[in-house]
Length: 243
Image 1 (cartoon, rainbow, N blue to C red):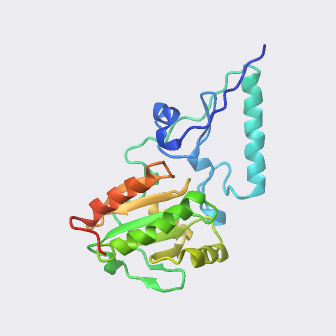
Image 2: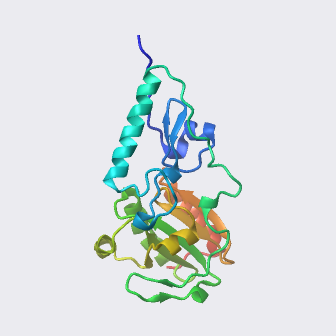
Image 3: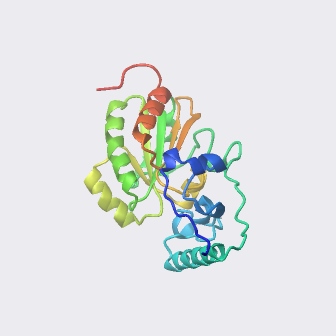
């Protein structure tokens, strides 16, 4: 009887596999215990992504075909009983560069309507940055929730929603439905570089009132909203939320 390759899907927020191998971000693909693909191999910087990932840009059909072909060949080799050396686990570094800046970068940002976002006006406030994409289901839920967060912390926090790997037309269409209370920014290469690599969305960065990064949340674990609420409350300082 031939060998078998085990296929399983694990909740990223509670993944024994991720914990065992020290993987903090996703997507990752293992075949048995061979690391086949890492977050940096996909990249969500769109056509301007220069991260050098094997399948970047991911939305290019040719890169998706390459991924399927490479994965099929690896599975076939494992089924044949061949020992295969996978990628090294290099996601655990201290600090992880993908976490982005340790302090809020001073950027000349403009919102979706071309209005400048004055970085000086962010001083003394908590700042929440969500990196998101129009095709990301969990992102839509989080963006809607951030409307309420911005309302509750109107005087103490500012939210920046940075769209990545998404066309301006799709972003505008989605924002018509969400009607954001916060700033929406198109993620140019400079903006994405400033906030760290985006290999998965949503990616949320929380900066405290002194501009220090206090939390980074990757993906959409089951407790995402609870973790985000707690992070914002701590970053915004003591006191009740605005009403």
